[in-house]
Image: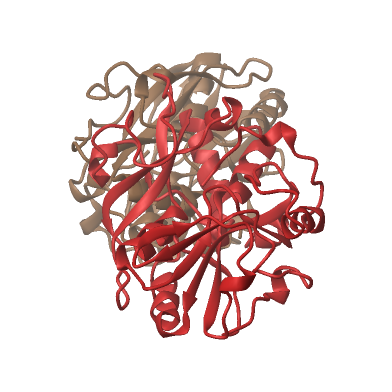
Amino acid sequence: MNIVSNRQEQAFSNPLAMRAASRNGSWTRETSGAALGYVQANLAILPSALADDFLRFCVRNPKACPLVGISEKGSPRIPDLGVDLDIRTDVPRYRVWEDGELAAEPTDISDLWSDDLVVFAIGCSFSFEEALIANGIGLRHVAEGHNVAMYRTNIECVPAGPFSGPMVVSMRPLAPADAIRAVQITSRMPAVHGAPIHIGLPASIGIENLDQPDYGDPTRIMPDEMPVFWACGVTPQAVIQAARPKFAITHAPGCMLVTDKPNAALIAF
Amino acid sequence: MNIVSNRQEQAFSNPLAMRAASRNGSWTRETSGAALGYVQANLAILPSALADDFLRFCVRNPKACPLVGISEKGSPRIPDLGVDLDIRTDVPRYRVWEDGELAAEPTDISDLWSDDLVVFAIGCSFSFEEALIANGIGLRHVAEGHNVAMYRTNIECVPAGPFSGPMVVSMRPLAPADAIRAVQITSRMPAVHGAPIHIGLPASIGIENLDQPDYGDPTRIMPDEMPVFWACGVTPQAVIQAARPKFAITHAPGCMLVTDKPNAALIAF
């Protein structure tokens, strides 16, 4: 989920500085614009009894749930994403879910940690948005400082155990030539949602009104633009919420896990 | 230019057989469906005084004029496209242009050959259509056995010497997910027009009425489909015609130069 309104306020030029500020409690807000060039990730923490099902869900739905890291059971570390990384403290703000209901929004989950938990880090559109912008493709929601528009679709994810539900997509309006270039650019980044799943014709994927996104903010579409739809990391959050597990933790919207992995390292070819 | 109505009639399973039949005069028609798996090319033969300008035109407009071969001045051979290949006899039917007017449609140009001519072979959409079909993407004009729909656009080619004019595009209607996959597939084939140049919104590129193509046949577009536009090899033909050179030779529509180069060899990555 993209929160960009504070893009100008942040001074964290590298992932370690960002994580350190989260860790010591001095930063408790969105991470958009921090540590540019490095992968930020959606976070899901589940009891081990659900972890196998959720892992299969991610593997079966790689466009919505591209895994960039997974912990050992009981370990709060994912060394591949940062040797110092401690998942209990390094995200600015978390959401704690009990029976599918939001129970708390702490900035530290050390006291909630247990040897039974498994951490999933899932790719985020920040990485490909950076690549689009680097290619000269303007993104209106970024320019206007609001959240990307997101919609539930009529595309059912492939279920696994208790996890099922519709794919959520993000939408960015682009001129046709930019849309084609965006397909090329994001095709190279399968670990962060990859190519769009749809272009134009919102009704074909069950979106009746682009002006009323289910998440985020509406984005104007100009007459010479097409809506371009990417699978979105809100999908796994919505699916976890719908499964109503006794206990789960995610990141708070826009408060991502900032990793040491360069975006460039995600480029498949 | 795609002529597919005789796709079922042809028995030329390899490029040499196709060229031999053209050479001995036993085949004087379209080459669609012949020697599947091998590159077919648009042909332009120009006096050397125009060749440098035309070469620069092709280099400046690579999506419409992707060069797959060029002869030495005065040579009717392009060994890279076939060791036996003789451009004077190996195309089923030619068009001879004098001062921009169609002067003849011979099946052999040996008597018109001179040491002053230069041959240009330009990639053709047959190659990428084969790749699309191999990926399970249906093409309506192929299924219905008519020519692809082609349109003059308001996109001006980058001029070179006397050569200038609008880009001509071919249009294929595709469901959005297929359109995205088609961008991926054709991006890998820059030598045969590469990625689409436009998708949806025909008016943005100066196409007022999709039902009235400037070349080829109209193709129905279903409500759940988008028109997808590729730069087309008719562009250089139209540009040569408009330049009104004293003398030029092209292939007759659909009667392509069939080469020994596998389509697979054009895949860039």
